[in-house]
Image (cartoon, rainbow, N blue to C red):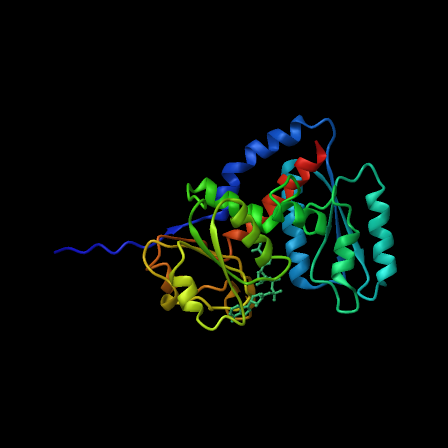
Length: 281
Ligand code: NAD
């Protein structure tokens, strides 16, 4: 008997984004004004600079105005809050991104909260997080929105599926879990304290991993038919960007998987601009 072993469908974030881009460009053209996005960077971490470059490139491609404010690494809490306040009050500015992570002397929670919820394209303010938790209209955190759209475009439904979200950070794992709940999934969250991670991932239809722990999800964590979404990004000196999933081993077992790079990352950036256009109407 001939047994055919099929490798997983690759959920290509770049291709999905390219397919969705024309309709977003159309929405930008239909606006009465050109939106303005401001990105605040503190210091010059190379990874932040690379992420900002990707955002600025997409802004230019969409015909959106963007401004990059570079603050010195030793900027005070008060100074950065003053900068945000001025942008909140500037009617020409439609979206504000504070590039994370911030240096340790700054209180990230307070700084994120300083952004007006109506300009919060990252969707990270308490107002917008609460909206997501209560299934109300708000700005969805960009990573969660990007994943939702990557799945929808690739005809993978979340409703009534068991989704294991591994990672429960305030900025990434938690909003992803909330989005899945809002979409009608049965959500299980795994984290650093979870003893039987394999038990959690094996039961899921969809596994979404956002830990920053390179190679955490191995062939032992998965079974045929599952969808694996890898949010993690680790920059390694030997092979560049890598995710939380042992891609080569896992793709031989599951039904669909995102690569790193080129999976969730491009969709997160795309979702930022969808949020910006929503806020610019
Ligand atoms: P974080 O360090 O704040 O949180 C990590 C979470 O993972 C925690 O909840 C922790 O409990 C859990 N975790 C860590 N090690 C674990 C382990 N061994 N087993 C189970 N759970 C474990 O990180 P974060 O800010 O949430 O980011 C997570 C990852 O997502 C990072 O690699 C980050 O670079 C990446 N990220 C990617 C995108 C994207 O668009 N692709 C966007 C944002 C963040």
